[in-house]
Length: 413
Image (cartoon, rainbow, N blue to C red; front, side, top):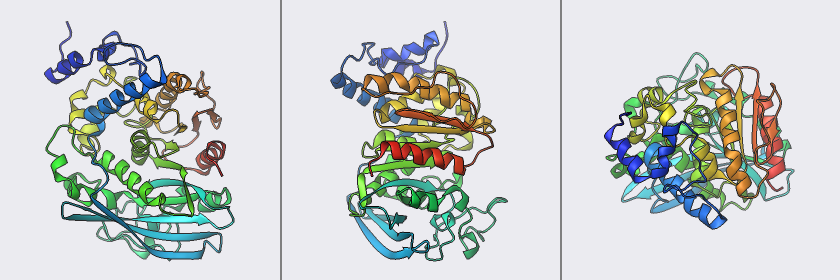
């Protein structure tokens, strides 16, 4: 008989439906932990709570609620940004919890020609708000910024004027403004450090130190998702934004965070995930691409401590990433990938989209129409979308064309 670690055996005993993995079948989100089948929308609400608990305790970790005190300081408004095409706003989100303080900045561009309030796309960025466009009015971040061969602009971890617009190719602002969508972005390092040597010691983690001494700790992935929700808190106060029509976007590790934000905060009307791979869109149990051992050793801060119990057990998980999409359902979600991004396992992301179809259809949507892996540059979507394009790990204009088309279909203008 196969032997299991004690913690996993306890989990299987506590949740009998988890034993599905013993047969090698993909766990069914429409089956309760006790083995019963979900038969109604009311029962789905209960099952959704079970799935949220599973993923929170076993993978992403526990997140706090809204901070005790929060205020928004709109410190910049320029109605003639992008050569008159947009209004730029910059907002500092101030948070207090039990006497501790933290803050981060939001950068917004709102299309001037669109009828307000406008729908919006919010997403985390990799290099700082200043890096998404060369607009000299964008505030340079004062926290650590990486310098690499691809983005050699920071000096001793500090942003310089040379950093402006370094990541602009991944953020086609003109196209977004022309399509009538506001863009809202925030910098990952202002939220939580992505460096192992500083994990859980900066940003919003300083507000909740009590959430670290536990197996389901407040992970960095959970912190990034939590900050996107705090961004949504602000958007609900801004009369220029239609807060009922806000999509959350992310690329790579930040695409993982976008999916978890959409899963945990139902205020997000839609999720756009670009090459999120392991811990995002791809199935672990395929055993292809980046695996759980690498996630938990190279990036130990990304997910909760409890997730490490599944190292070398990718194909035995009692859940998989279609459970995350089930939490997002029936709201639309799009998974994009690239041919050369083998670590993200493009076929695995497609299989996750397929596996989500049952829940989406159960909830009355058209689900995912894809049955056969599509050709390059062919977008397949209904309520769930997918495409694979040529090239590697990046966000391209082709990706954004699909995202904006999907957004036009599902978000109200």
